[in-house]
Length: 180
Ligand code: SF4
Image (cartoon, rainbow, N blue to C red; front, side, top):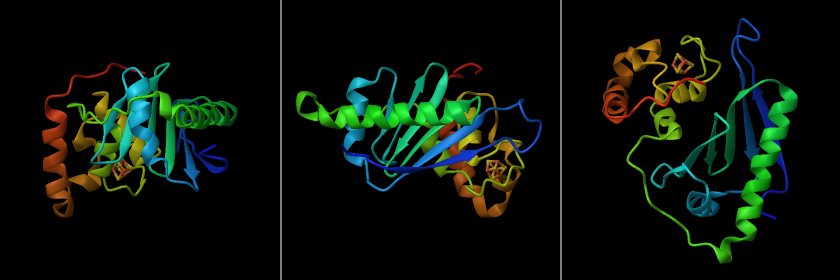
Protein backbone atom coordinates (compact mmCIF):
# COMPACT_ATOMS: atom_id res chain seq x y z
CA UNK A 1 0.00 0.00 0.00
CA UNK A 2 1.44 3.35 -1.04
CA UNK A 3 -0.70 5.62 1.13
CA UNK A 4 -1.53 4.21 4.52
CA UNK A 5 -2.32 7.43 6.34
CA UNK A 6 -3.14 11.03 5.57
CA UNK A 7 -4.45 14.15 7.23
CA UNK A 8 -7.73 15.53 5.90
CA UNK A 9 -8.06 19.30 5.69
CA UNK A 10 -11.40 20.89 4.80
CA UNK A 11 -12.01 24.35 3.40
CA UNK A 12 -15.51 25.65 3.95
CA UNK A 13 -17.09 28.58 2.13
CA UNK A 14 -16.29 31.86 3.95
CA UNK A 15 -19.86 33.16 3.73
CA UNK A 16 -23.32 32.19 2.51
CA UNK A 17 -23.21 28.59 3.71
CA UNK A 18 -24.73 26.35 1.07
CA UNK A 19 -24.04 28.78 -1.76
CA UNK A 20 -20.67 27.22 -2.43
CA UNK A 21 -19.32 23.75 -1.98
CA UNK A 22 -16.49 22.57 0.19
CA UNK A 23 -12.97 21.73 -0.91
CA UNK A 24 -10.97 18.91 0.69
CA UNK A 25 -7.27 18.24 0.77
CA UNK A 26 -5.57 15.04 1.88
CA UNK A 27 -2.08 15.83 3.11
CA UNK A 28 0.08 12.77 2.54
CA UNK A 29 3.12 11.49 4.38
CA UNK A 30 4.43 9.77 1.22
CA UNK A 31 5.29 11.20 -2.19
CA UNK A 32 2.95 9.84 -4.88
CA UNK A 33 4.75 11.45 -7.86
CA UNK A 34 5.65 8.07 -9.33
CA UNK A 35 2.06 6.94 -9.57
CA UNK A 36 0.89 9.99 -11.55
CA UNK A 37 1.97 8.65 -14.99
CA UNK A 38 0.08 5.42 -14.24
CA UNK A 39 -3.03 7.38 -13.29
CA UNK A 40 -2.55 9.36 -16.50
CA UNK A 41 -2.55 6.09 -18.43
CA UNK A 42 -5.76 4.82 -16.89
CA UNK A 43 -8.02 7.79 -16.07
CA UNK A 44 -10.03 9.06 -19.01
CA UNK A 45 -9.78 12.81 -19.38
CA UNK A 46 -6.95 13.17 -16.89
CA UNK A 47 -4.48 15.96 -17.57
CA UNK A 48 -0.94 15.22 -16.45
CA UNK A 49 1.56 18.01 -16.17
CA UNK A 50 4.95 16.43 -15.64
CA UNK A 51 6.72 19.78 -15.13
CA UNK A 52 4.30 20.78 -12.39
CA UNK A 53 4.26 17.22 -11.05
CA UNK A 54 0.47 17.28 -10.97
CA UNK A 55 -2.45 15.44 -12.47
CA UNK A 56 -5.97 16.79 -12.63
CA UNK A 57 -9.12 14.89 -13.40
CA UNK A 58 -12.85 15.47 -13.43
CA UNK A 59 -14.95 12.73 -11.87
CA UNK A 60 -18.70 13.05 -11.72
CA UNK A 61 -18.48 16.78 -12.41
CA UNK A 62 -16.05 17.21 -9.53
CA UNK A 63 -12.55 18.54 -10.08
CA UNK A 64 -9.78 16.51 -8.52
CA UNK A 65 -6.04 17.14 -8.35
CA UNK A 66 -3.21 14.79 -7.44
CA UNK A 67 0.06 16.40 -6.42
CA UNK A 68 3.27 14.94 -4.96
CA UNK A 69 2.05 15.00 -1.37
CA UNK A 70 -1.53 16.22 -1.71
CA UNK A 71 -4.82 15.04 -3.15
CA UNK A 72 -7.52 17.69 -3.55
CA UNK A 73 -11.20 17.51 -4.42
CA UNK A 74 -13.69 20.34 -4.96
CA UNK A 75 -17.49 20.67 -5.10
CA UNK A 76 -18.17 18.64 -1.98
CA UNK A 77 -21.51 18.96 -0.18
CA UNK A 78 -20.31 18.39 3.36
CA UNK A 79 -17.74 16.75 5.60
CA UNK A 80 -19.16 13.26 5.11
CA UNK A 81 -18.94 13.55 1.34
CA UNK A 82 -15.43 15.00 1.60
CA UNK A 83 -14.28 12.05 3.70
CA UNK A 84 -15.89 9.55 1.32
CA UNK A 85 -14.50 11.14 -1.85
CA UNK A 86 -10.98 11.53 -0.50
CA UNK A 87 -11.00 7.96 0.78
CA UNK A 88 -12.02 6.81 -2.71
CA UNK A 89 -9.21 8.78 -4.33
CA UNK A 90 -6.64 7.41 -1.89
CA UNK A 91 -7.89 3.89 -2.68
CA UNK A 92 -7.59 4.65 -6.40
CA UNK A 93 -3.96 5.70 -5.97
CA UNK A 94 -3.21 2.57 -3.96
CA UNK A 95 -4.93 0.26 -6.46
CA UNK A 96 -3.14 1.89 -9.38
CA UNK A 97 0.20 1.61 -7.62
CA UNK A 98 -0.38 -2.08 -6.92
CA UNK A 99 -1.18 -2.64 -10.65
CA UNK A 100 1.72 -0.58 -12.00
CA UNK A 101 3.56 -3.62 -13.37
CA UNK A 102 0.58 -4.35 -15.65
CA UNK A 103 0.39 -0.76 -16.92
CA UNK A 104 2.33 1.38 -19.36
CA UNK A 105 3.03 4.77 -17.76
CA UNK A 106 1.94 7.75 -19.84
CA UNK A 107 4.11 10.87 -19.50
CA UNK A 108 2.31 12.87 -22.17
CA UNK A 109 1.74 16.49 -21.24
CA UNK A 110 -1.58 17.75 -22.54
CA UNK A 111 -1.71 21.20 -24.10
CA UNK A 112 -4.54 22.52 -21.95
CA UNK A 113 -3.50 24.12 -18.66
CA UNK A 114 -4.27 22.03 -15.63
CA UNK A 115 -5.84 23.55 -12.50
CA UNK A 116 -2.73 22.80 -10.47
CA UNK A 117 -0.58 24.58 -13.03
CA UNK A 118 -2.89 27.59 -12.85
CA UNK A 119 -2.87 27.37 -9.06
CA UNK A 120 0.92 27.56 -9.05
CA UNK A 121 0.66 30.96 -10.73
CA UNK A 122 -1.71 32.39 -8.10
CA UNK A 123 -0.58 34.12 -4.87
CA UNK A 124 -1.54 30.97 -2.88
CA UNK A 125 -2.55 32.97 0.21
CA UNK A 126 -6.18 31.80 0.35
CA UNK A 127 -7.15 35.38 1.26
CA UNK A 128 -10.73 35.03 -0.03
CA UNK A 129 -10.89 38.38 -1.82
CA UNK A 130 -12.06 36.64 -4.99
CA UNK A 131 -15.04 35.15 -3.11
CA UNK A 132 -13.55 31.65 -3.21
CA UNK A 133 -12.45 29.72 -0.10
CA UNK A 134 -9.03 28.89 -1.51
CA UNK A 135 -6.72 29.81 -4.37
CA UNK A 136 -7.11 26.25 -5.63
CA UNK A 137 -10.87 26.67 -5.89
CA UNK A 138 -10.28 29.89 -7.79
CA UNK A 139 -7.89 28.03 -10.10
CA UNK A 140 -10.60 25.46 -10.84
CA UNK A 141 -13.00 28.25 -11.78
CA UNK A 142 -10.39 29.88 -14.00
CA UNK A 143 -9.85 26.64 -15.90
CA UNK A 144 -13.60 26.17 -16.24
CA UNK A 145 -13.97 29.69 -17.64
CA UNK A 146 -16.15 30.75 -14.70
CA UNK A 147 -13.68 33.36 -13.40
CA UNK A 148 -11.10 35.68 -14.93
CA UNK A 149 -7.57 36.49 -13.68
CA UNK A 150 -8.85 40.02 -12.96
CA UNK A 151 -11.14 38.57 -10.27
CA UNK A 152 -8.08 38.02 -8.03
CA UNK A 153 -7.18 41.49 -6.64
CA UNK A 154 -3.72 40.57 -5.25
CA UNK A 155 -2.71 39.21 -8.66
CA UNK A 156 -3.12 42.67 -10.16
CA UNK A 157 -0.24 44.07 -8.07
CA UNK A 158 3.23 44.70 -9.54
CA UNK A 159 4.75 41.83 -7.59
CA UNK A 160 2.68 39.37 -9.64
CA UNK A 161 2.98 41.02 -13.07
CA UNK A 162 5.03 38.17 -14.54
CA UNK A 163 2.76 35.48 -13.12
CA UNK A 164 -0.31 37.31 -14.40
CA UNK A 165 1.16 37.52 -17.91
CA UNK A 166 1.96 33.79 -17.87
CA UNK A 167 -1.49 32.99 -16.54
CA UNK A 168 -3.19 34.97 -19.30
CA UNK A 169 -1.04 33.23 -21.89
CA UNK A 170 -1.86 29.78 -20.53
CA UNK A 171 -5.58 30.48 -20.24
CA UNK A 172 -5.79 32.19 -23.60
CA UNK A 173 -6.56 29.25 -25.84
CA UNK A 174 -8.46 27.14 -23.37
CA UNK A 175 -12.08 26.25 -24.01
CA UNK A 176 -14.47 26.76 -21.10
CA UNK A 177 -15.41 23.48 -19.49
CA UNK A 178 -18.90 24.58 -18.52
CA UNK A 179 -20.48 25.10 -15.15
CA UNK A 180 -20.49 22.78 -12.16
S1 SF4 B 1 -8.13 36.58 -4.30
FE1 SF4 B 1 -6.40 35.58 -5.30
S2 SF4 B 1 -4.95 35.23 -3.62
FE2 SF4 B 1 -6.92 35.60 -2.68
S3 SF4 B 1 -7.90 33.56 -2.46
FE3 SF4 B 1 -8.58 34.39 -4.41
S4 SF4 B 1 -7.11 33.54 -5.88
FE4 SF4 B 1 -6.16 33.35 -3.85
